[in-house]
Amino acid sequence: MTTKRSLICATLGHVDHGKSSILDKIRGTAIVKSEAGSITQAIGASIIPLDIIKKICGDLLKTMKMDFTIPGLLFIDTPGHEAFTSLRKRGGNLADIAIVVIDIKEGFKPQTIEAIEILKASKTPFVIAGNKIDMINGWRKSETALLQNISSQGESVGKLLDTKLYEIVGELSKLGFNGDRFDRVTDYTQQIGIVPVSAETGEGIPELLMVISGLAQKFLEKGLECDLKGPAKGSILEVKEVKGIGKAIDVILYDGTLKVGDDIVIGGIEEPLLTKVKSLFEPKELVEMRDSKGAFKSVKKVVAATGVRISGNEIENAISGMPLQSVRGDLKKVKEDIQEQVDEVIIETEGKGVIVKADSLGSLEALIRLLQDKKVMIKKASVGNISKKDIAEAEANKEEDPLLVAVLGFNVTSESDSKSVKIITHNVIYQIIDDYEKWKVAKKSSLEKKKLGNIVMPCKLESLKGYIFRQSNPAVIGVSVEQGTLRNNTPVMKKEGVELSTIKGIQADKENVETAEKGKQVAISMDGVTIGRQINEGDTLFSFIPEDDFKKLKELKQYLSVEEKGLMKEIAEIMRKENPVWGV
Image (cartoon, rainbow, N blue to C red; front, side, top):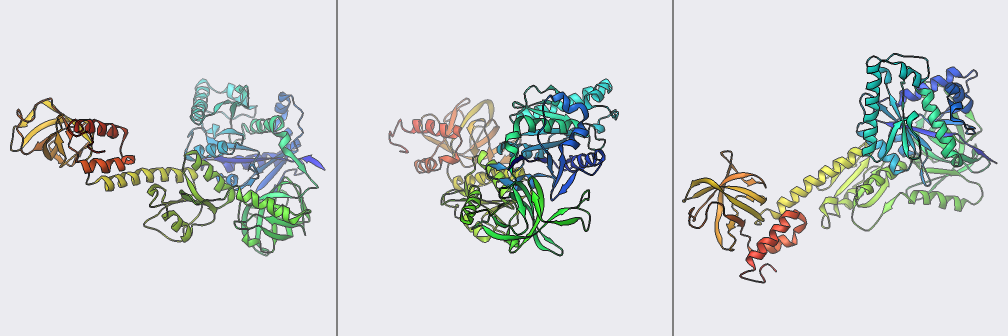
């Protein structure tokens, strides 16, 4: 028996921008509009039927001129990226659509960018909720429809709202999306709709539900087909200790029916876990389960799409984000299918790359996708805390590529510290990647200094006219660094390829310095030369690189800039006028 399930919708966005408040407002509005408590609480989710959505939206849905056949919306209550990235099914994320919540006054923040990058990588459609319009200076609250209310605001308020909306449009453009206010969108397959809302006053909430419902009906309807008589399929939201039950799993079901006594297979790191459903629990109607004791009731079966708490033997070994399926027919086939879904994400290679760990299968997949977008090589990626073995495997990269001697972890901890391996952990994926990129830059610079420390580096100078400070003993003259970096104790030559002297001191702004970068004008001192004889104003000088140093630089050319490589060729041409095989 095939039917349509509720649309699964997740909320993402920066902390304190109002993700939870919007869900609370939607839930609260639904309760008010419902005469018999038609809103259903589920584990980690709230189910709002279509008839309640119609009551909230009023005449708005009629303007869309379509027949609505979706049964309703299932909002994932757990706010933030954690729920979205944890919940996974074969082929992508469990959520059908997402709402990215943005404080309209503050605009984009790091977690906003991360949320959109994750949605982009998982190809999940989304809309923007521009929250806190009631905080715009001069805003007047109204019970009328949103667009009517916006048009009735003062001119300065309207301009300010438009400015904030276009700032969001601009930020979306940087991330590769076209966006506009929801009523100005001409093609939702090409543009992201932005709905101004207030979680405080409820303004814009009907319009937000209208846009989501319309998108679901028009573009996502086929993907909402559900086989009620088929096996239950779902994803673990959380594994927790429950008083009176012991270990239990909170699960979002997206297909089929689950009954007490059913055998279920749960994905594992090494192999799948088989257990029997001892009991099923769902919240009592209109009870806020996060805060209330005795909020749950025991049930015999649940039907997708919904959330449910499951108890069973050996369930303590389950991991959040793992797929599960009830067994109907061939157990071996179910196990193989479930484990294939895990193996699609887990990475285990013999090659080189960073080690990646995450708290759940879904968040691991999100982290992997974003790292691959940055062209970061991955040697191993798995679920769980960072072990000593992970650190040892990262250290094995040391000889081949020191920039890969790192372990990156999302929402996990490390068993031990390491002086030789860089361990980066954070609860924001964006920050992990950012910290790794910064570490790579610092590490590369450190390696360059270490490997190139005693080698004469390529450098090109021009002696400045009118800046002779001393003719000899030592000669002191002003120079401009044209290419490369000038270092103290660098031997120098002219275009003829004969060593003139060695720079014994560098002064910048009357202070002694060890180096001077391209573009700097400094004074240099040299023994054994006289200005006007061996060297003149306007002369071009090059670093005099010993042949052995030149050969070492060729081996270490990955640490040289494009400009330094070009300068090496110029110096080699000078030296090869006398010796054609110099430096070969």
